Image (cartoon, rainbow, N blue to C red; front, side, top):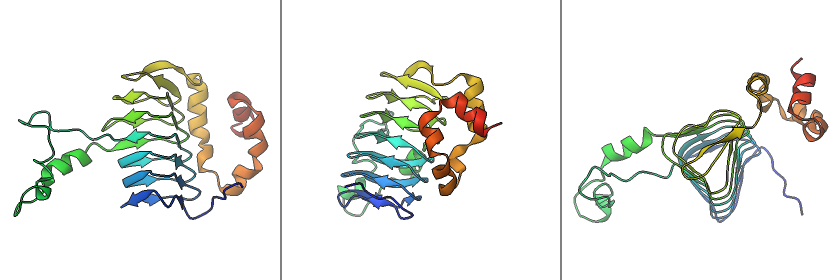
Length: 205
């Protein structure tokens, strides 16, 4: 049976979504965990994904077991262990280290529109992934990813451009991801059958 997406997000009963905002036609898969996430229209995250403190654009395709904003431990301290910043879980009469969590939140991850993040990829704190980019399965992204590029590996490095720069720039100018639902449906056959340059020739003339 085909699942039906709509104006309300489709969240699997086994997923956990906290302090987050989800757009229309979005989907959160089984055993996913989202905390302090903004995920815009038509984006989805597959099973076993985890995202914290992230802004995700429209039409993001996030495969299974992806980790977005895998948080840093305090390497400059005498210990890496979280008893120092989650102290209230270990000791009576002491607060958690709010300054430490504020530092983590300063390193929000930003993901653009129409991005594909492959199975098991990890995005480290503070990175920005540009529109139309592709991140290979298992990659560890420690630096920003330019729009319409394909990266992979550990650490992730440029494999190639997805489109030539002129095509990428025209696609970003077209910004088809901002079209309304009826406009997307009207162009469905062209999304299916035209390549990027043919699509631009028709819609960005």
